Length: 422
Ligand SMILES: *Cc1c(COP(=O)(O)O)cnc(C)c1O
Image (cartoon, rainbow, N blue to C red):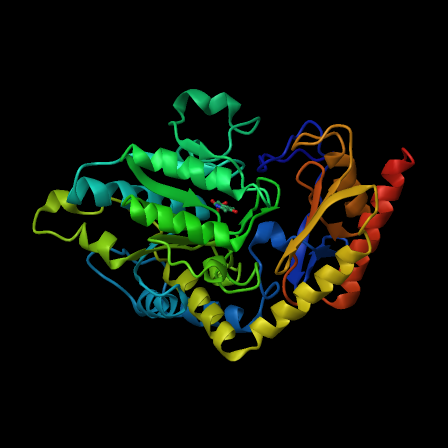
């Protein structure tokens, strides 16, 4: 066994087998050091949208490399960032007017929280309560863990996390309880923002709720002068069927966070897009009202060029049709398990399909997780269940055959589990 100094994310090295090296990526595949093609059925942690190494994005990166590396983003600007910002404003929900760049989903959310508190600090009576939904996930920094679900992931860091108000998850038919809880929280007059993953909570277990709930929550927020922050880090760029999930609820949030699919998944980049009011609250001859945030690699020109290329693909290719086709294939795939007692909560939104394996012990640390992963690995499929929740979130270029093969493997895994042979 070779001993690597690398410490991998969300990895228990004492239990994990030696990792294969990926030598190449192509379309829906990762090709390992032995030349085996592994189907990337979860888009390499939800970032790859069109497919690995899309030629338009790779060309844009290559071209950008001829003239840029990192450029300071205060005092100076550059065309890739300007062009991208204009393009983002064009495709984002109407009313979002300003773009702040950072480099990951977590930082996009941190920036959004700081914008929200800065807005109230600079304009009126400061507010600092943040309201979130049960089971939400917004990242792994101290701030974003604070606003996410508490559990095994962050138990050790609990003493450093700040308190937030939590709404019950709106299961279908029980939405009123969520709306009431939000309105109750708002009555204090201290709620700065509702931070929410629109339509589906990703890492919390692919939990889907009705679009109308989001519309109602926005109405309540407006009534009480609270902001809505939409964390579209996972849902953005077509995953739920529309470019942004908010569109399906006809909602313009006050702040929208995007990252993962922003560059088609090729390079790290994030944007926090906000309304004019939030920008204007920081606009003043009083320098204390400046938005005090930056990271060294803010608006990396090469990453921005990759994102501009992604926008171009959305404009010139039938991405919407591809997504609709994939959604249709996902529902066909799921339909094989309809009424199958080995599965529960079969669900789908747009290109994302999920189902729960019926096991005695669910949750993220469910015993079934590691053997399931090992089984899928043997089948040359990259599928990483969230505990007993199996989901497929493939790149849009996946073929019907490859998607079918993924569903075959899910059925086979359930069979082995039932027979005690997983
Ligand atoms: C992945 C994710 C994040 C964090 O993004 P990173 O780039 O991993 O920091 C935040 N919010 C949601 C909804 C996510 O799915």
